[in-house]
Length: 118
Image (cartoon, rainbow, N blue to C red; front, side, top):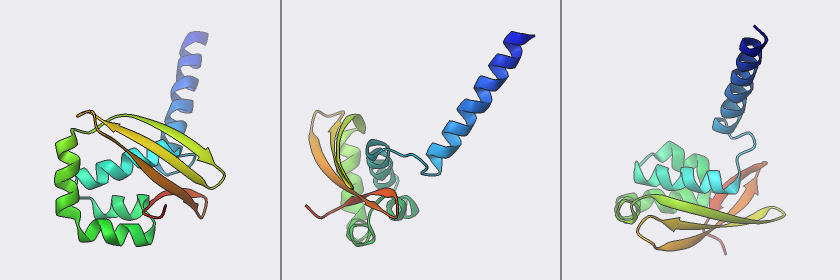
């Protein structure tokens, strides 16, 4: 009986953690970078607006078809590494095709956003 209560409590905690992460609460720069790339792959304009700064989102959406093709050719994200320095982060994204790139993220209203600024 105690074991079932512990398992139930663990499931509740895990559910809350996943709910917080999906709403952006506590999302890391790497998680935001992955979501941004997935949004481009799916041509998800809402996802792009959620993960890019407004200025960057306009640029990505303007060239979405080309950007989507480029992301799909890379085969998805293999791994990410992040370096945070205050309100700025650099996420090195390595794709499944072996290529990599650095994404710059900034905190906007407490949330990480991909920017085109260097």
